[in-house]
Length: 190
Image 1 (cartoon, rainbow, N blue to C red):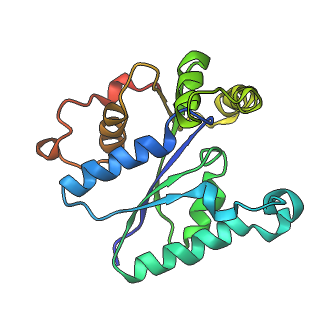
Image 2: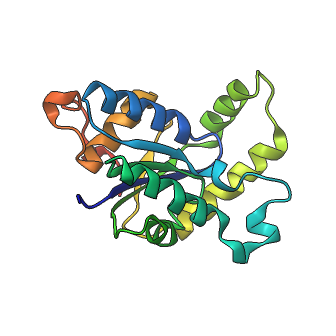
Image 3: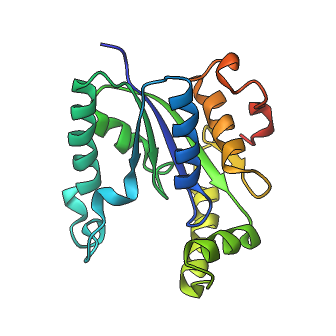
């Protein structure tokens, strides 16, 4: 069986993780590259938050293990996993996948102005101030705590398709003739 490969995409709320994953999905579909996209935030989305009320349960990791094993049974070996703190939890998440995956970890970054614009669009025009404040605090924490081997990509002036092309180059999942020849991974900070 082919060894798993995973792209962990982390970043503050409003940075464009889900949008970039969708754009990467579209690129990979166009290149006929088998892959799976899992929105990690949904693996333990409940109230009260399981990771707060029952941290010992490791619910997100257990749910990922179950989902990934089912996809592996179907022949998949590439995973795009988005979650705010995925780049901080990459070791535990990779272990949960159960098959020693090749890991690429990317921290998407954006300034407050770009993030506020994106959050406004997402919420129908109003800026949720508490969410913006939380996003700003999280951005600082992620940038400081992420390991040196995590590639940082500033997204302020990039389209989702630009970000997707950079992610495709970083993973090596698409060849230049498959639509990524104009992406330059050297423009990512890392």
